[in-house]
Length: 531
Image (cartoon, rainbow, N blue to C red):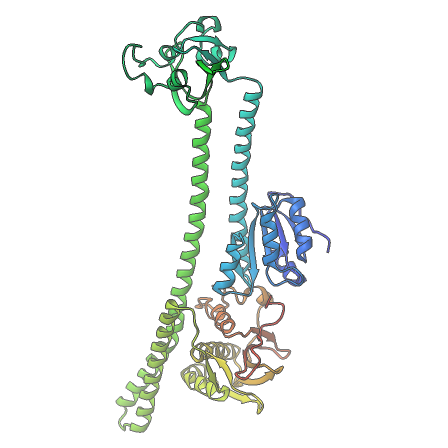
């Protein structure tokens, strides 16, 4: 597959996926965001493009033939040319072990499939900005190192030759330039008195603490950085120096020292600037992590409200019915007992939702059970009785004879089915239709059960494929846009898939799949989403 390059470049982003449809979605998501986009459909091509173009961000699919995403990431990080690229894994493997493995191999982030466009855009923008800033820091470091090398090659450091008492017997032009003295005036001056005004008299003690003193008197090589030295005009500068003992003769008699020093004032300022830039990079990373936590907390809060609202609404409606029955002249105790029983069932359902959420927050394990599809759908229909009355509609349930039991979380599956049925009832009523909502269950292949909910509404908008399952997108005036995204998350947690179909005669059919209890463990998610 040939590489595809978009127009003007702010940062380079490499898209790697063996699925052409996934590549197309990623390309369409990022093509107008100012990036230079490269495309690869296998690991070898990805490594070649990355080495040649040095991308800031690499969106890397994990489950690829021949060379998977783990292996590609490992080779990218082993190549010095591509080691600093931010690798963002793309995969339907949304378990902790997969994420830990990705981060252990050097990955920078992880996006679960099916991905949301806004999430991809935000994460690519953040990682591209961080990598570009880090590369600028590396460039500045290299420039500083290059500057130091040029200084050494040009002998621009100050060089002194000292005798055993610290008197200057040689000074190069750079020493004079740095200190503000004439080179001829430096010779004969005492190094300690000239550049360290607090130096003690030779007869006093304390000289051992002065720079270079141990080299001149005991032959100990020294190297210090950040020493304050004085210039001719009385000003000071930060210096780095190296002092090497000067030995003469076969017996290595100590004759003084050679001191090489340089002004590092500007260098220290650059280092402080680099430290500030590093702090800025870390602050941006912390802000990204904080934003991610806030997003998760917001989604959970909205999810809890939506989950609990349905049984609470049913309880309110049943309670109103019970009050009307009690206010009637003749009390139908049997009907009242049935209504109170439904209130109790809905309250148990609300508490079960809360208990399930609390359990989810403690540990990720799902409470899956072997479920009977006819019983599950009949219970769901009973929960929807209030909605049937409010929408003046009905529900017809059809279960094929060959439909076996499934393995799933009963509360979560019932929540999905109830949400789809309620939506169908509302859509049918809005269109003025009197036909009942059709709920059916059939086999799909050997290992999956497909449950369909068909309404008789006006149908779905043209952009439904792109937006319908996005969080907070809704076609209802008072809707929150939470139900369908939540249904997708719940169905995927069972190993199934969810989607919709437009009906030729109008209306819409929503469906979701669940794995059979006695199956081979195969996923009910299409292959295009399961890699």
